[in-house]
Structures are given as structure tokens and as C-alpha cells.
Image (cartoon, rainbow, N blue to C red; front, top):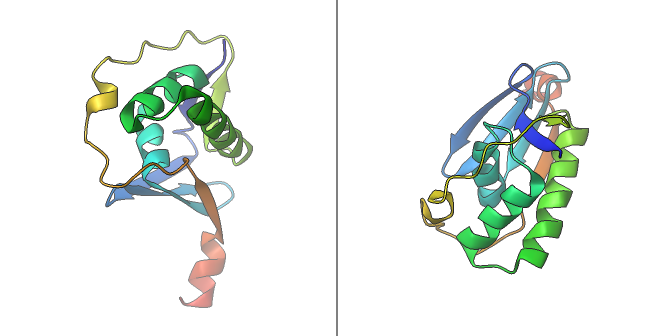
Amino acid sequence: MVAYVVNRDLVAWRVVDDEAVVIHSETSDYFSLNQSATWLWNLMDLPRTGEDLSAALSARYARPSTETRSDVASYLEHLTRAGLVLQEPESVPLAMPAAVAGTAVPRDSYEPPQLVKFGSLETLLLSGE
């Protein structure tokens, strides 16, 4: 069983208005996460399976699990490729707390979790923007 967890050794982030900005310290790439992606990101503070994340997202937004399953799978693939999360194949993920899905009612309607890469922080700083 594969579990996913935030790559705390190489990643820094800050959440502002329910959306996260994430920076990879080795590549200096920086990313934005939309509201649903940020919510999932916070759950991956501990190892979680894709199924657990999908079920929690489905309950939170009252969406069909078939929809959230493919959305979460795509999101996790992007996070993994960017080196923002680690896969722990031998890990036994912790059970998702029952109250997770109902916490902090979303202010927006459902959007698939999305990771957007903006580029290199070094490039941004050198550009003077």
C-alpha cells in the first residue's frame, strides 16, 4: 500500500486565504495550490493513501468518489513528479479522522485539486517582479 506524505526536508510552504504557495528548496521551483489542493496538502502532514484522500475530498465537497479518485490521482502524480511529496510503499498510513471531511466548510464550490508551477524563485527574484 502506497502512502503519500509532504517532503518536509525539501519543501517549505505558506497558506494564505485557503491557498498554498509551495517552494522546493533544491530546485527553487515554486508552486500554487488551489483551495481543494491545499486542503489535501494539509492532510498529507501524515502518510495518507490516495484512496483515503479521495474519500475525504468526496465527503467534503459531496462529489462522487469516481470523480475525486481520478482528480486526486492526477494531483498526487504531479506532486510526486515535482518532488513535493514522498511515496512510502511500505508505510502503514494512519486512518483518516472521521471529522476531517466536515471541518472548515469550503468557501468555494468544488474544483479539482490543482498544482500550478510558476517557475524558479531565483528567476522571479532576478526579474525584479
